[in-house]
Image (tube, rainbow, N blue to C red):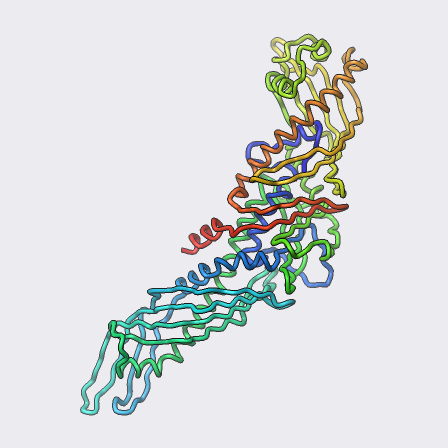
Length: 522
């Protein structure tokens, strides 16, 4: 979604800076996937209420959760491995042996495997994850002692292994805590199908193994449940912070950022998760608030994995930030301008062009284009409409002096653009445009009909195609610099309707994000 005509020409990213509307096409897909990984659980504000006002809406559906669930095992494995297991100490009076003291020390995991997992959405409540057949072998040192009947004290220290088979049930809720959305798992259950104690590598249970298995198994189960569930809660919120940092980085560039604070608590239904965000663009730490529209859940479906909804106010806010940051401008040297003309099949030897440049060699010229005021963006069924007023200047050097203006003209331009994304590239299609001349310079030849006709021809046949082509390349490079090309985005669609823009797509699991996250935990 970009501006066509000369309006497009001066909407140009500087280096790796953010050009207008880039975040709201494929770049937003990246943000959505990041938010998805944390169950939409990072924001800076949280309010309650039935209304759903928003500038940006993100919806992830059940099919997407099934894809993300493919790698749940790695996160659960990390939770087991990161958990600290305290020493287990106790004493018990036993027949024959009398008072027995014992302690399990230096408990660590030596083996861990997970057979499978399932995920379910419980409407209005939680995201339930079931982990089946988790095989865990713990190792450590068992110390025990007792006083024999003949008064002799016995103290032993031997290595042990505990072979377990566990099912986990984790019901994750999205809650508000001190103005931030947090994930909690108040229902975290561990079911033990097997718990066997092996001492010093012996696999045949002897009386000591049987003795200690019987009276420490209950305590061991409680300790394992408490530590593992605690670690799962901790990792969930670390992931939320990880996602928030990633999202903030993706949606910021230089002095421009985005306020992704939630306007209400995330919604959980039987078929999707949904979050509602402000979407205010921030320039130099100052946010431009605007009245948020009311979002209707019926605007999005649940057959694709991931949906985004953007109000046209958000796009307008982005255009304002880009204008304030002086990004809506372009400057070409004479040789660059000549190359542009020739690339589009324009005859640079025409007399009218020589008349326009006042007899100066075209190679000595400098051409600048910039917005005179903030562009206006609206979304319609036919596409994104961008209206702007632009000025074009032809400047030529004078000996011993700075450049001086040989010719200027101003145009009001309205363009209608549709966008698509495939093969990791953004494509822009110009559907329609209108141009209205405003003013021209005071040079004698500027008002001639032949010059005016030439300029209109140059804008329509050269300016628009060249700018669209450059924007496609520049915006694709910008989005890829944010990591979009690392994602497997499947059949994305960019759809405009009156008042909003919508993205819908499927995706493959973002393995690189999980790797980054897990590496950060280690």
